[in-house]
Structures are given as structure tokens and as C-alpha cells.
Image (cartoon, rainbow, N blue to C red; front, side):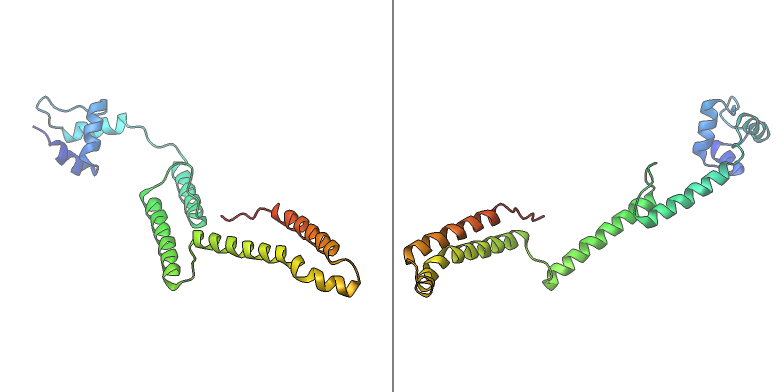
Length: 175
């Protein structure tokens, strides 16, 4: 009678899942009663397990170093994310969210829809003021220039409307 799978895993310094996988793939063979002969299993494990190729450790170290540089730059490596990277991203998002909440509480942020409505109201009042301007000043200007008041009013009104039309073609982006 040999060692149980868990006892052999402790003897080998691996997890019992690794031992189960080695049995399943035929790298080691158990005794008929399901236990393992430690000496024979060690020999089979060594002979049936591929050793890592030369340079693997150096590439792994270089990859970890590269990933750490990418993490500090804010980008994630293309090969997927580790738990640490996912937690880091989560913490960054939490920090940004808290920063926005704090700014809102301090009154440093404005509501987007309110800002758009305010700008629209200001632009509308500015346009109305310009449309009323020729009627207010045309009589005074006509008397100073000795020209017909109605003719000057029509000319000023047409010029102001043309200018407002040009200004209206500019579309402001509010994102």
C-alpha cells in the first residue's frame, strides 16, 4: 500500500489537483488500490514531464516587467488581465467617480441640461436685442445723417438679419 493522492502531493510539493491531472494524462500510474508508490511515481513524474525550455524564465521576467510598465501607463496588456490589474482598474474608476461626486458636492460642476438651457436663453435674448436695435436707433441716425428714417431702418434691419443668419450657421458642440 502506497501514499494517498493528497499525501503524495504534499511529498511532491504540488497540489492534489496536479497529481490528479498527472494520473489522468498517464504521466504517473497509481497502484490497483488507488494509492501511489512514491519512488515509482517520482521516477515516472520526472521522466514523463517536459522540462521548461531554456530562456523561459528570462522571457517571463521580461514580460512581467513590460506589464508593470504598461500598468503604470494606464494600458492593459493584450494578453488579458490579471486579478491585480482588474483590481487596479477598479480602484482607478472608484477614485475618478469619487472625484466627480466631490466636485458636485462642492458646487464645481454644473448640470449639462441646465447649462445648455442657459446658453440657449442667452443666445435668444442676444438675438432679440439685435433685431430690435434698428428700430431703436434708425430715427436718431437718420436725423444725424439727413436721410430718410424709413430707408435707413430697412437697410439696418436687412444688414442685421443677414449678419445674424451668418452667425446662426455656426453650430456649437456641447459634449
